[in-house]
Length: 86
Image (cartoon, rainbow, N blue to C red):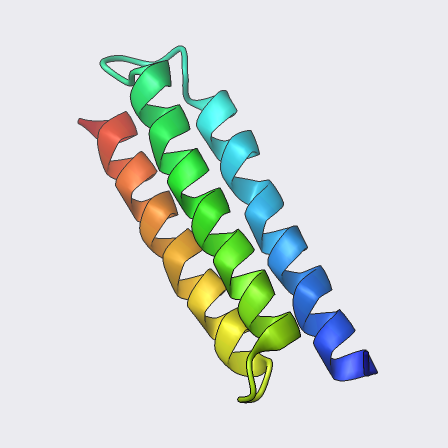
């Protein structure tokens, strides 16, 4: 495996570590439900796993998997933030 694929995999792992920390930090506030937060986090983790598999096995450039993981994690962070504020 070349260095570019390894970098993309490491970046996906680093991006996916933010979600559990962010969800855990907001559990005690308002109407924020821990069960709902964990569903969002696990959904994003599964999408990150799929993106990692795309980086490893897909015939197209690994940046596609990294971009997909970034978009999914940003969407999940936005959803978690909306639930914390509401």
